[in-house]
Length: 128
Image (cartoon, rainbow, N blue to C red; front, side, top):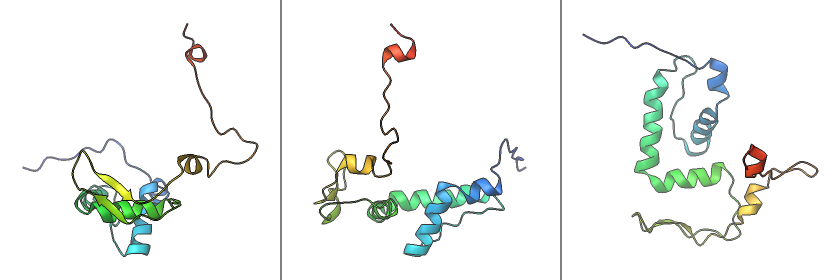
């Protein structure tokens, strides 16, 4: 006999529609023609759809990470010549040949006059 599933929480349609994963899968469909459909009407169906997305991300590592590179608009001062080599851990090297400036990426959304970095020390947290 099938066990009835008790749903403890379910996202609203607006939450699904405005989610990061929805934006990413819509972008994948638009740019690469990959359809990992996210249902606004039936969140339970998204469990299976998410599994398809996850399987693609682990079975086609290079395509997935290239899509991430483009989706997040990674700025490279030299283009990569190979996405991954070797395909073993440890020792895997990603985006071989590319040159990135970490600070450039961290601060690219920063605006003049706004706080960019905040630090907390032990005394700030009430410690000795």
